[in-house]
Amino acid sequence: MSKSKLIIIATAIMMTNAVNAQTLNLKKVFSKPQNTTTTAPAAADEFEASGVRYKANGTEAIVVAKKYSGDIYIPKTVSKDGKTLTVTKIGDRAFAGCKKLRSINMSDAAIKEIGNGAFSGCMFLECASLPNTVVKIGDDAFHMTNIGVIELPASLKTLGKRAFFFSAIRSISLPNGLTAIDSRTFSGCADLKEITLPASVTSIAADAFDNSPNLKNINVAASNKVYTSSTDGKIHKK
Image (cartoon, rainbow, N blue to C red; front, top):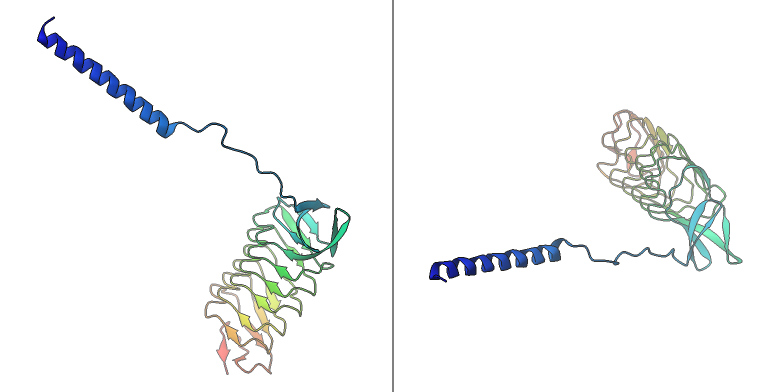
């Protein structure tokens, strides 16, 4: 066999081996591992009662995420394994993005906290009844909801950032005991026309009411030592 033919055959073998090696490398990169996906079991401390999902936490229960719709009622207590648990919190993002949620009734509950983003993106949520035990409403709690009027309880001490950001709120009265209105709390509320502030509010973020063009009446308690009422939709200090 001539020398030139040997060179051609050797070159062909080298090219074939290179292609095979490249194919093996591509298979390693792009092939999916087998039997690596497992379905996580439901948490042992989670349970459902009357269509609402809860997480047990000692003697308390926290409302957790699920695809909720329609009208939801949260009771004062629920039962798990023969034990009575007090419902004390709406968990972070528990109802977030539930576009078919219409109303939430918590008036009989003993809820102390409404978590961050709890009802964020519930665009058709029109009614929320809060109990007189709520101390904290978290960041983005009612962001992008269709709630026009809501009664905040006298127990409320903390109202989070963007709590009613881009909501349909029309008027609101803040309870005495609340000391601050945080960043963008009522920003982007096109329907907001009136807000009433108590004597206890001593700190208002500069952007608290940004992009709420119809806000005109800011009614401030006469005994408030920092702010005064206005009819131009702006915050004025004494």
